[in-house]
Image (tube, rainbow over all chains, first blue to last red; front, top):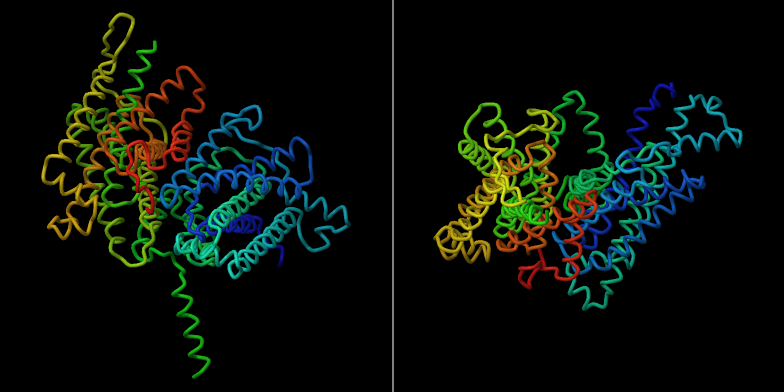
Length: 316
Length: 293
């Protein structure tokens, strides 16, 4: 029964949904401080390549390399974030898009390290490492009624879910803290925020670096989920895809990123019946959505209304 | 050798300049980045292939067909993806970006479907005609491209500075509301801008087909990204900046390929904009108020 439900294909789609939620959050966090950063694909690539190379060449444990990958992306986020402070709006968007493209070209050309456009293969997979670990402490998948590859994917989903929930918890907590209020005041009006004594430089770079860290973490987990990466995984298309997750779901509320990433990861899978035409539909859908709901599917107003209705029902 | 490279660079640069002009016109008037411009350019190139190689039409007719089709695409783009977003309350600057990205995804996959994924050859009758001056070889194609782009750029500049419609367009770019109060039909001007920008994209598409002899559905993307880099380099919404920026990029790419590492060719545009954004964020010709958009 359980064995039939846990189809590896469904579990893999679930893994990608969770990774994409992280990526959508990596755009949401800088955006909540008014910075539109399209560098997520580049930071994701940094995290992925760092972690993959460390595991392949030095055979370090995965939790170390994934963390190193994310931290490196975060540090580069600080380095890129400081000069980017001079830019706003569309300028920042194009400059960060350019940063991502430079990173990708670097991966293609630095052949001695990255094997060029062929990409890295044989990256240790997180799920298999978890299986090994489980076996070493005496848990056999068959004892739980699972096949080996079901256990691999199931454990992966659980680990990713924990990480995503932790990031969500962190971002939501942060929104209601001093930092989060500083972010939203910068988003509303930078000059007013500055005159209220908010250190704009610090908070903007912090938001940018947090986005880079989350993207790097997602990239490292991505590399250890599919076990194969190449520069084309971190191209312009990926950057745009991540942006669409956030804007589609609604960029004003955090749940919008989660919703957008979930729906838009599922959509191409669901649209498989129109196989060749699915990206044509995808394009049309984006145009229609922006014409009908330019703020994204979910927004604050919707939540207020839902809450209002609930209160009414409660009192009557 | 150097002079030949310079000629190659100028040819490439003038094509870049025309692509960038399309971006800059739309940005100047509407304040948005038209992410679908690269794909409109690509469709223009495919119309060129279709009319010259498959139907065997002469080149001038191919130009005409390409301009008609891309202008029509520009009109449809304006109607379906830009106009619905205008004047609505609470529309962030992200919305037109996503909407035009939607159009670009649609166009790229549609042409992928219609024309196939691979490169299509672009044959012109005079592809092999060349002149030799001393040790320098110049192809007729290069001269044609250069002449057409100069005519286009001069024509556009004159049109913008001298004619009534051009002045109306500049007024709209300056301030939409004031222009509208002063009796400019801004709705018509905006539509006209998008149509002209797209038509220029179509011309650039055929020129690229002529210059490189190959056309593919993916070419719109890299050209679009480079066009974006150029308008940042030259200054957003600045016509002169787009032309100079295009030439700078074309020359530096060609020289890099000839004397440096060709692998980094696609990165040079972005390294340049990252540098220019740090030194002079408003671009080479941009005005001081480069903020807020």
